[in-house]
Image (cartoon, rainbow, N blue to C red):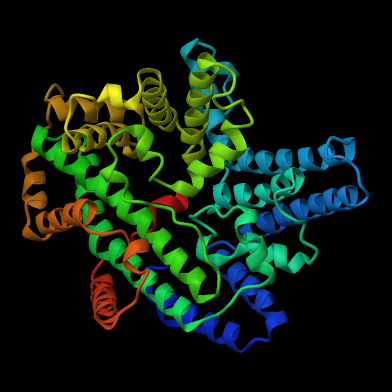
Amino acid sequence: MVFSSHVFVFYFLPLALLVYGVAPRRGKHLVLTAFSYLFYGWSNPWFVFLMAGSTAIDYCCGRVLAAELERGFSKSQSRCRAALLVSIVSNLSLLGFFKYFNFGLDSYNALVGSLGLDAMQWDLFLRITLPLGISFYTFQSMSYTIDVYRGEAKPIRNFLDFACYVSMFPQLVAGPIIRFHEVAEQLQHRTHTLEKFARGTAFFCLGMAKKVLLANPCGKIADTVFDAHGAGVVDSWVGLLGYSFQIYFDFSGYSDMAIGLGLMFGFVFPKNFDRPYLSQSITELWQRWHLSLSFWLRDYLYIPLGGNRKGSRRTYANLAMVMLLGGLWHGASWNFVIWGAIHGGMLALERLLGKDSVYRRLPAPAKIAVTFLITMIAWVFFRASDLSSAFRYLGCLVGVTSVPAGSGLIAGILHQPYYLISLAIAGWVVWACRDTWDYTRRITSPKVAYVLLLFAVSLVVLTTQSYNPFIYFIF
């Protein structure tokens, strides 16, 4: 089930809000958890057992930590370390098996095949299906035991409260990644106000508009070019621009809807996007893009690796490792490794030279343009189906790849007024409009009319579009 569907908007969400609203205070987490499991199991009910297992393991590890710490033992005690290790290993094993088994098998077969050892290849009939949102809820669940171990959050006693935290459907399958200490207090005490609900509704409506009115048509542009196996220079750049807009509006639109739904249920989730395409360096980009993942990698990976405290060489190595792992987190493919390497290399370069030095002679608009160009080039590896397709597309961008006959038909699709206007509006929103977080700080009557109008138009347009799931559902 996706947010941008009539089933969710007209049936699931109203019913969830109604039952949640009439439930007593002690029963609200039960209602929210039940609807979250229904939401997650909508496409494949078997996946709920994986999430339930991860939840149970981390809850038990948290209880062990709580018992040891309450008895006055140091977190360095073996039982505390063992509980933390069980949580981390179980979550990473779960994530690694389901997300990287097929990738590892294909890489192994390709390697032995290139060495002429075909007899050593593994030809397995069965392949592993990737459960939706497993990258998000394993990171989220794992943050609980880490936060408790570090003393940054108190252990939770009620299993249902913890299950609600892990499974909360607004951000379950595509984020933002909510760390436990960010909502620990809200799980025990939170307010439900008309102001929260109104802001949440505005968030949801604007997120829906981003997805349906901007991400989907831009996605059609990107799919047309990327799936054509070759296009002219201009069309290739238009397709890449379309994908750059699509992935931003698709993911930020989902994040807006998730934050809005959280507000409707009384939760305040952190900001996940801050106008990233206005960044003047790649360093700044990662201070604006997918903030929940950036902070998670910083606090739970980069800093434990030593951060910038162990010399410049170690700092550059840590940056590179974090971004490579961040690339692999997005998907089991060498494309994502290269995407992570591009960003990691730029982060290290900007730290080595000083980001102001790298772009020192450029005015601010030029810095934004250069950063956006680097980001776009990296998106080629993110979007292409494999490495050969990515390099072929890069060749199309500079005109060194042969264009197949009939590629002129692509221009006939791309140059339709609907798609050109969609690109123009997307660019205007990206570089000239306030982000949803700031826009909804104060809800006025004109804003209510505006967001409701956008929502109504989105629902009408949605009926004319084919099924188009959120990009980050596959991560």
